[in-house]
Length: 303
Image (cartoon, rainbow, N blue to C red; front, top):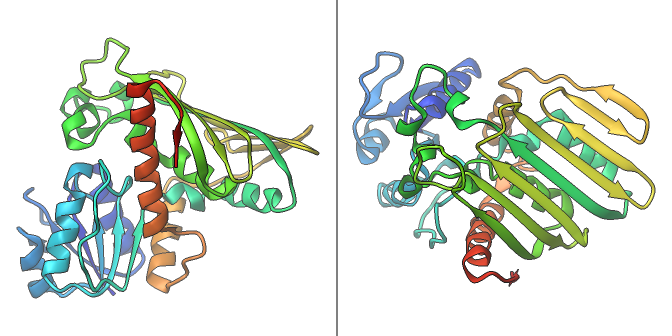
């Protein structure tokens, strides 16, 4: 299969490497000089010159919509994976002939979430608390955090979008959001133009009380989840790989590229069970917009 990766930053290079390891013939659309893979300057040029079967849009979030429009105008009719989040603000999808469109919420493929999803099938969920925090200056050693897209709100950066995995998996596990309110913004001394802390409270189809905090400030680096059901308390620590059900603990290992590899394999093989669909990706974009609206208007926002 021919796979085209649009954008060759840290995440684009990771996608390209993993796709090559899976046996795909890889090409890039990037302005960066590289000899790693064949390189094209524009999307139309790559579609006509490379004729890919699968396209991964790994450009800045604010450029995703334009990239999809270019793919559609070029007549691309294969599979598309868009890096998360789908858009930086609610947008209409262009008219297209794509075979399928997915959003790269690869955390769904983490063994811990897979096990949790199975556990929750027979549970009545009462409350959920999710937390993710990582100190932004430590994300990419050797690179000034102020130069990254995460620091640039105009490019689609900011913690609410950057760490929207939590919003996606909560929707996925709990049947979708119904209403939410939020607090958030730029509160720290980080030299960025994007939000660095967000706290969201919401109700979902399956759970009446859900809270999630996202931040760029946690020097301990944490990603955790606690769920109370009518029968059990379930805890997950993504950093240590620990799953706790009441007083029973088990460790689940997943090497660094596992979730990305399994996500790409699912797209390539047409196994959509755990992939984030276009509709689900649009829902997360709406959730982000609702959270920002809740902050501005200081109220609950209904879906």
